[in-house]
Image 1 (cartoon, rainbow, N blue to C red):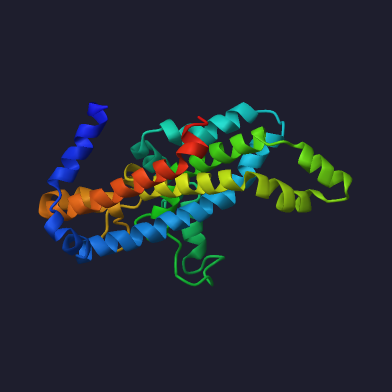
Image 2: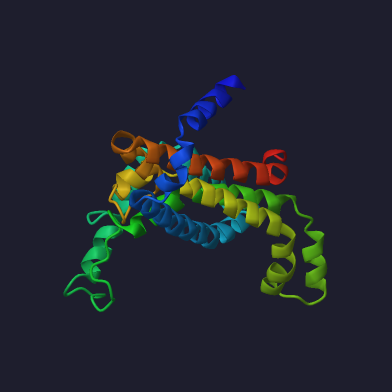
Length: 256
């Protein structure tokens, strides 16, 4: 317990409490806070949109290679974040498998040049931050919702089917309400993970103030120039992490 508690106590002791609000109100801190909220919420929306059908498929559908698909989904949990960032570069950079063709297609003379915003580029952009955060946050949502779908009583769905409800109606009116607490828990976990993402973000999107510099990146950069602001931002991340763990302990931690 001391091994976990002492570093946190040291962080709290290091903080300049008399100037905490002033430090958090500095332009660097406000930019990092604003960008972190935008990107983490965007990553959460993507995680829910992509993770819900994926979790349902893994929980309810049998198909060849299902174990491999589940392992692929869970890979970002154990993959070093920097390696994840390099993988994202290989896929979504201007020379990547997907990023290259998209950039060419949206450039002048390309098939999609009519799209607003000019050439589509994910690296060193806010969109790139959202992609990086989604990559590391999505598994948290999938494993939480998949576990709920596996453990729920499917007899309610069977009863709805016998009463004439179709698959989509049963899913909306029966399945989703039954697993809603786990949906919320998975979304909160994904959001917290996205908010604290560092390695994949700095590797794939860079550390550009006002564009890609989220809270963790701001802490890293400000440690040398303005350590008091870095500590203040660290306390914000610490408070968010503790709040998430306390709020979800009955639904996620004790069940695990």
